[in-house]
Amino acid sequence: MAIDVYENPFCILGASAQDGAQPLEETAAKLRAYLDKMSVQSASDGTVAGIDAIIDFQTWLDSNELEPAIPTGLPRLDIQLGGGLKGGRCYVIGARPGVGKSALMGNMAVHAIRAGFKVLYISLEMGAREIVTRMIASVSGVSIGKMEGKLLSDDENLAIVESYALMPGERFRFSMMARTPDAVRRAALKMRAAEGLDLIFVDYLQLLHVNGKTSSRVEAVGEISRSLKLLAMELGIPVVTAAQLNRVSANTGAVPKLSDLRESGSIEQDADVVLLLHAKEESFGVRQVDMKVAKNRQGTCGKTSLIFDGSTMRFRQEAV
Image (tube, rainbow, N blue to C red):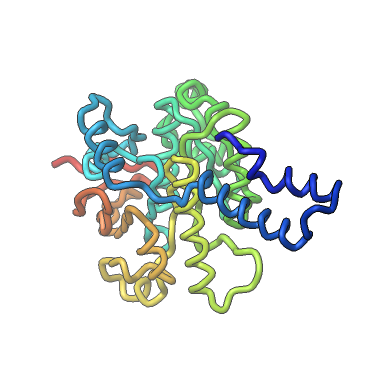
């Protein structure tokens, strides 16, 4: 933008200071008016013109490129999600304790890593070794009990070693110290700058804290859920987090619903997708789990039956 030096009050101010030709108050007023004018001309107001939005939509519609998505490892869920986990969206997995929400996130993380994506896993419940144990079990098929008891056959040792190549360590990073949304964001930005970042997991939402005081826990959780959604939008990647259900729901054993999410109002509002897990019958360590897509801002809702093997922390879809 060309600037007319004769209208530029910075020039006038300099001349005024030299010869005293103009009162200082008048020069200051011109300076304020000039800055206001430059601000209006140069700064964006954050709006998008309707015609620009329509042109952008049609350009996207005409292109052959599909919106990038990270597969979850559960094909029918990927179909409901429009291909998988998508950038800028926040996904919440809600369940009662012990149903498998952390295990499901671990399965998703492993599948993303094996597909070549880079993952940041924020854990406030488990250490890195415990998480890796679960991941190795799900990839190798060797039970956690045998690993912990060091009761491995030669074939099982080989399966574990082979699993390392399937989930290269340079593709994922753990953080056990990111205990606030700001700390999660710093960890994400650091990893993105160092080696790239495609996907964030947070286990789990209600264990995060906010900086400063809030009037209630509901307000604090609302600030946390909103921060995770904003982080997904800022980085343009998916953020997946687990969430606890309230105690009343846990005690009744009924099929969970959206309102059962603890401090649910903000979580429901901020999440793009909410998955609710409900444990059913269990036999010899294998459990049937219903997974309901209870909210899907950009797609369909519905229920899928899963089989969960607790010995290897593996989820798989039940055969139709």
